[in-house]
Length: 126
Image (cartoon, rainbow, N blue to C red; front, side, top):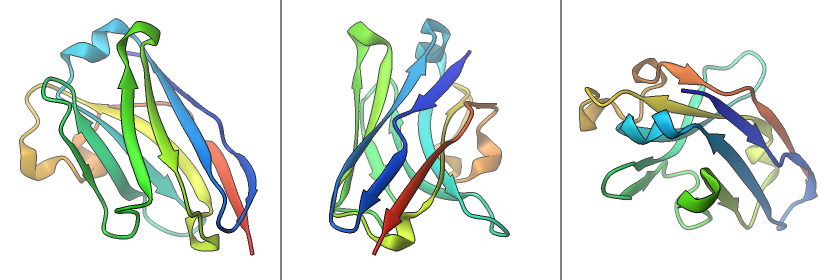
């Protein structure tokens, strides 16, 4: 399984960005594709995830209603659409895959994900 995140950049507060995670076809055997973010000195934080088979999505309370995960199977890509961005959304964002054995209750924990892409930096200016 290989993942590659892209699309980060600098945006003003209130603006939008769309991150992309390019996945290999082996990702289709994963149970979840998750997005996490991290700032210096802090733990990696769950942002949202999509269950591969059902396409069911779930989000952290801090981004619910502003961020949306979708996938384009033809392009082997999962997207994180980020709207109404706030300065506190500034972080390095990562996509990750959790294996098929992952239980639902673990899907928000970074420890459940065993394959990670490189991060992409999102900076939101006030």
